[in-house]
Length: 415
Image (cartoon, rainbow, N blue to C red; front, side, top):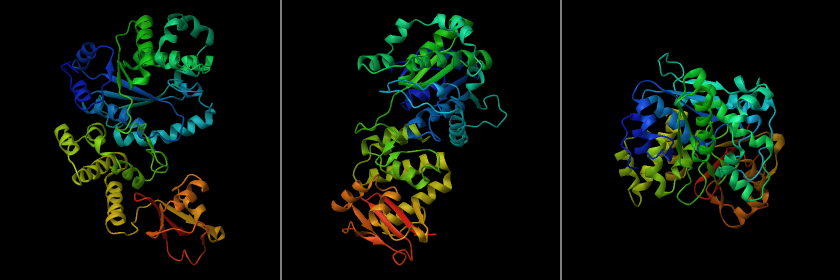
C-alpha cells in the first residue's frame, strides 16, 4: 500500500491490516477529514450469534468510532429473507420472520461491547434494520425506479456470481435480487442518514460497487466502499471455525473459556497479525510479540487471548478463563470455568462415549470411539482406554473431567 492517508481512520485500516481495497482512497480520505461521517456494515441474521469470522467487521466499526466517525450496524431483517449468494455453492435455507427476529435479538447482544450507542455524542452509533424500508416496497415501482439502473450483463460479471455459474450450480432469481436489495440499502442509508461509506469483506465488493453506482445515479450522492481481506489462518482454515465448530461471539453459544482457548491456540505465524486486527495494542508491540519464538510465543498467545476476550466478554471473564487455563494446563487441576455438562440422576447410567459427545468433545459416537482408540481421550487426566465404560451415580459423586487431546476439556457433574 503506497497511499499516504490524511485521515486517522484510513491510517489505522492500512497500518493494522484491515484494508483490502477501496473504491476511491483520496475521495474517502478527503470526506473523513471534513467532519463526522457515517459508515455502515450489514449483518444478515442467519444465526442467533455472529462468529469470529465477523469480528474483523465489528473491529472496523469500532475503529471508525474511535477515530471520530459514526458507525451504523445494519441488521438484515429484510435481506435475510432472500439470502446472500456471494461465493456460496448453494442457496441458503429460507428462514421465517419469527426466526429472523429471534436471530437479530441474539446478534444485537455483542455489539454494545464494542460500539457506543448511548453516549449522545455526534458520533454515537446507530443500530438499524433494513426491513424498515425493504418490507413495504412496491414491486412494480421498485422494478421501474431501481431495477432499470442494473445491467444483468454487469451483474453476471461479478466474481461472486460468476464463480457459482462457472461451476454450473443453480443461482435462483431470488438470490440474484440480493445485490439489488443491498445496493438499495446503501442508497437509503445515504438518503436518510447521510451515510457515505459501506464496508465489508472482499467478497462483498460487487454488492458495494452496485450500491455506490445506484446512489450516484438516483440521488447523485457521493459515497465510497472499503473492503477487508477475507481471513484465513496461516494453515489455510477459514477464520471463525475450530475443531468443534463455529466460534460464536455470544457467551450462551460459546463459553468465554472456550472463546479464550480458541485464541490461545492460535498458530504461531498468526499471532502478530491477529494482535493487530483483534486488539487495540500498539502496532509495534503487536509486531514485537508476533516475532517471538520458542516458548515465548506462548506468552504472546495468552496476551492475545486475554485482550480479545476482554473486548468481547469483559475483563472478569478473561481473567477467569486465564485462571482456569493455568489450573488445567499448568497444575493439572479442574479449573472453575470449564464447559460443564450437568446430568440428572435419571440420565444414569450413561456410556463414556455418550458423555464425550454430550460434553461437546466429539461430534458423534464414532468420533468419540476413535478418540478413545487412538489414546486421545482422558478421564480425570488418566488415559481412557475402555470404550465400553459406563458411568453411574457413584462415579459422579464428585465432578469428573473429560479431555480430548491436550487442549480441550469439559466437566461432567450431577445436578
